[in-house]
Amino acid sequence: MEIINAAPQFDASIAHQCGEEDLVVNNPAVNHGDFTEVEDELKEAQRKLNFPPEVPEIKVNGVEISEQQVLAEMQYHSAQSKRESMVKAAQYLIVNELVKQQALAKGVYKKTEIENVNEHEMVQRLVSFEHQTPAASENECLRFYQQNKIKFRTSPLLEVRHILLASPPENVSERIQIKEIAQQLVIQLKKGEISFDDAVQRHSACPSKSTKGSLGQVSQGQTAPEFERQLFKANTGLINYPIESRYGFHIVYVDRKIAGSDLPFDYVKQRICDYLNEKVERKTIAQYIQNLINDAEIVGFNFDFDRSPLMQ
Image 1 (cartoon, rainbow, N blue to C red):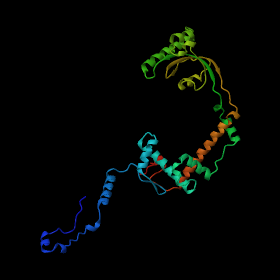
Image 2: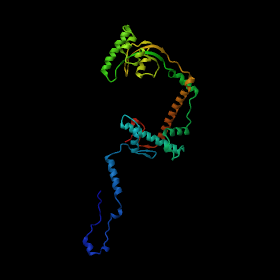
Image 3: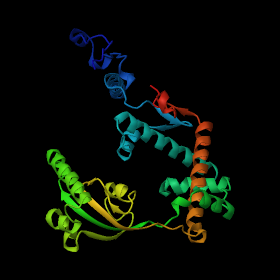
């Protein structure tokens, strides 16, 4: 930056006419100090004009959340777009700041210890300090059990034999051919043109070939999900279509099907109780945080995603 000096230029002829000790030059710029700070401020202002911030100024009850904080937090919030990740990061920082402010205001934590407290633990303690979260009663647990009995059944057991016609999932053309072969094999089995045992020996690429294709007793969760979805819907006997999985196509014979049985209430009561209590706690915490947001003065952010949470 060029500084214009308003003082008159020094005239050497005057120095000859006067003694140097009598010569005094008044420089009005002398008392204005160092201009470095002003230059820095101007440069920063120019930088902001050239590169506007990605995140607007956000304040939570007067406490600023900087752009640097939001950008640093984004790495912990995966999203389909940079803006969505930025929104999630800002939301997290705002809620975290609100919870900290409330915890300090209520005396739940001291300022010296609050930075070392996990935010989930902090909000749980705050909620329990200010509210009494109701626990699920035995009648509520029983009612949930009766309304959701299908969730509390043992897995059905199937005794299964199969023939695996192997094909890698990425080879589409080969899969089409293998599917046609599997369909023809099912037709042959249904017509009795070939026995299942013979078909296993001729065609199966599974190690179960050594036990005539037997997979033993199969319960849910033991095989590939895409295979199970079809398997457990089937009745006993030959399934009249090939089942596709990541491994290829399976021709399946269900020798025996043992239905699952209801688990007694006493056996699952504690699990139901824990589930209902956790559900109530989550709802209570969500409502508590919503109240903090409603009561706070938040500048630069709108929690309604559809209405642009980052207010430009």
